[in-house]
Image (cartoon, rainbow, N blue to C red):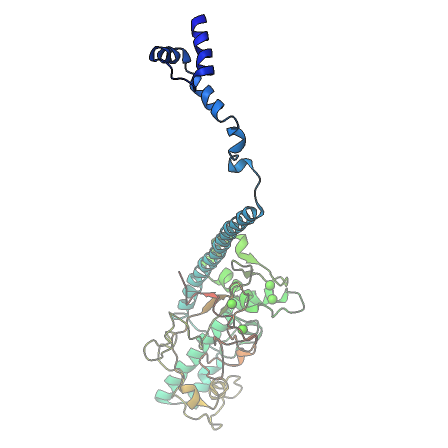
Length: 381
Ligand SMILES: [Ca+2]
Ligand SMILES: [Ca+2]
Ligand SMILES: [Ca+2]
Ligand SMILES: [Ca+2]
């Protein structure tokens, strides 16, 4: 050990000035041990720990780096929020479409039932027809009155506005039992503007009381139903919480995948004799006789319902009508014309002077509020 210690001391003192003999060098190597090189490295660069820069994360963050990080986080957050928002909107739309499809199925079943319904016409019609018409014309008059009777029954049992049930029938013998039920419900409503959302409220009554063999209630959950205007009449509500409304005879709705609006190719199935009151009577004349004591005079009735401008009416034949059931979409506005509330005065759904179902800027805001609607005739999947 002493010998080795001397030699190390020798190397440190004279190693750079004179060559070390081979034997001495070998001894030096043998005695250096595993830590000698590190010791030498530290010796050669004693200030290396100070000169080398610290690792990046050990020093502070610059303002630019902070801003870049914040921008990236904001972009990612916005992307996540946007995706979540789109997913919520898609969910609302899908829910609304599914609900409208369910309502559509029930309403269409009910609509089809009128093709085979017995129509209880007012008893005075038969006497009036016998006195006023002969032969073929008498048969055609019966067909015309029957068609009017079907439409009146539909109007009163499938109302899309309150006047459909509050007005008294002109063709039918009595107020239908279903209409009497609707009238009792209507009499219990309250509020300053009961007519608000009346289409949606009538749709709810029709679906719940006249479809699904009495089981319609089981097809809807409580979140599908609300009374948004607080008048006591319920409505089906869409994914945005707005009432789902309908039009029983949307003759002027042109954006339908189901309704051809072509009397030749797809005639009204309720008009089984293809009458549509086009030719039976000719010009309505005051010469027609009224049976003694009769309250229903066929010529007068037909004159009331088809008017005098028959040429204009005849331009629009009776095509198959598909009820329009619609949500106003996220903007809460439909831009679909629903016509006037006194529609009970006419039993001609094809009246060219009517605008029912017409897509137009009904709220007058200059915007197209139809585009985002959801309906049963233009369903997007
Ligand atoms: Ca209302
Ligand atoms: Ca209501
Ligand atoms: Ca509009
Ligand atoms: Ca809309």
